[in-house]
Every structure is written in structure tokens, then in C-alpha cells.
Image (cartoon, rainbow, N blue to C red; front, top):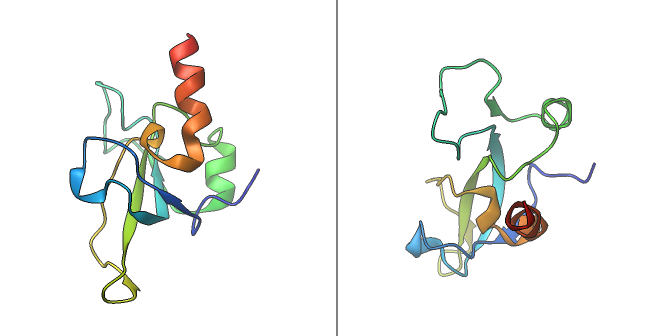
Length: 102
């Protein structure tokens, strides 16, 4: 499985308009957080370890990804994070195609 945590990609969604087109760094995976019945208190839903992500089946269309945007003007990563759907990140665009094929 390719490295996920620490990877950079671009946000292309509408849910977080302030991130649109920005380079973001992946800091965590929130398993099943894009589903209506998501329970944030369920053990194992917030993953910050590559091995744990692999054991949980990798990233799916049902996940949200915690990201930090790159602040170009300040030449640093923001300390503020956001949690877009995995489908809205460029590196997971194949998930969107697979989800729409179902």
C-alpha cells in the first residue's frame, strides 16, 4: 500500500470552499466518517498510523481525511486541520469513479 500519512495532494471538493485548489497534507484517516451513521467514539475510527490504515482496509469512499493546507504566503503548513471526504482529494479520485460505478 502506498504511503498515505504525510502525503500531499490537492482538494477539489465544494464542502470546504477555502481549501479548493490548495495543496494539503494528509495527517489522519477517519474511517467511515463520511457515512450518515458515523460514530466518532467508536474505537479505531481515527487512524494516524500507516499499519493501522492498512489493517482497516486502506482508504475508502466512506472515509474522511484530516488534512492541513499549505499556506503559500507564510511558506508553512497550517496548524488548523479540516476533514474533507476522501473522494474530494486528488490522490483518491479513483475512489470517486468506483463509487459512482456502483
